[in-house]
Length: 564
Image (cartoon, rainbow, N blue to C red; front, side):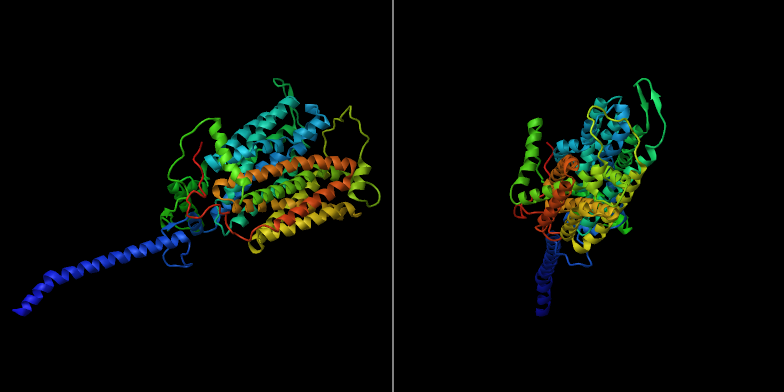
């Protein structure tokens, strides 16, 4: 009877309570493991090679899980194609103007300022495009800007006189600068932090490719001898007009690819609070890179960088100016100030040297090729080739020496090689080391080029001097890494805008010095490049991440503001 009572008590009182206790302990264990997994995903301390991938992750961790492969390479080629269109439109005037001087009745002064139109447009509008890209999206800005730029370039090819040609070219260049301001940011934000430097550098190689394609296309088109009269416009459609259209073909192809294939930047989507749209892009990247079904992508939830509360709705010019001020003023305050100044100065020096001398490259080559007699220095050949001035008339000769095209193609090929070499080395040496060595080395070649009597050697040194342009992409990669998402496109645009200012300053100063004191142009800009190398010594090491302005616990640090 007693044994029965004990069994009854155990069955009715003890066992149910023990069962409940075990259930509670099990639930606690599950919750603890779940909290531990989430915490490890947030803090980025998931062990490498762990069996269970995190289902909740930050964007950087999610990007790493997508891998690196075909998708990134294809996106790099797309971004490079857009960059190629920018370069071709920016530098094509160097070949269009000599061939158009008869049809448009151009003076030397008019040829000079029309050639500077693309740089002027970029200087005046890069700031606005940077703000628009940070608030409306990288893809949308490039799409709209390329379409409108292509349309106005086509119209410019039918311009009957210089004023209409200048106006239409200026409008086309304004919208072309939209892609110029955004393309590096768009490229960098599709690649995880381990491969970002390399992919941006390889994308920048299209700058070198552009310096090959422009003279090659001009070499094919300009020697053609066709002239189709258009009585309605009172013009004859000649080869230089076709060259204007040919230079926007990369934009046409890039626009089609953006419309049908390329998505918005995952970084922008995440910063805008569009986590689900961002995950769609990441799944596609994962599927193509790793050749796995999209539903096997382990990340199911992103830790959003966007704010949960939208700004109060505003409209009008005052709201736009306020928004632009909000994104710009912090760049000129600590801790961003010194990096803003450094990136702007270095880009100014690089652009002033590489683009400034590129404009006068055909003139210098022609002087050396046509020089007769003993071996001489570059500046001596220029002095000997200088014809007597006649300001009252411009000789109407729209033929160009084919040797100039050929030499330009060879130099462009060397440019491409330099970009590719830098792309392979950046992962091993880091951006800082390459910037310092390359800028210092090209600067010394600039000092030596005007002092060598052997013409072939002087041309080689002169070409190496211009290869400082291979550092443009590296500096953009530095800028993308230094600044958080909210200020990133604006920072890139400001530095590129200062670079375009350098292009205009360099073009005019070099032209002045080549006329009055040739050696000064080389020494001045070689000195600027070497000073840039010294400044690059102050850059942080590899992949230190964006500058932190506030404690990491503040969620608004990397937010992209709501559109004004």
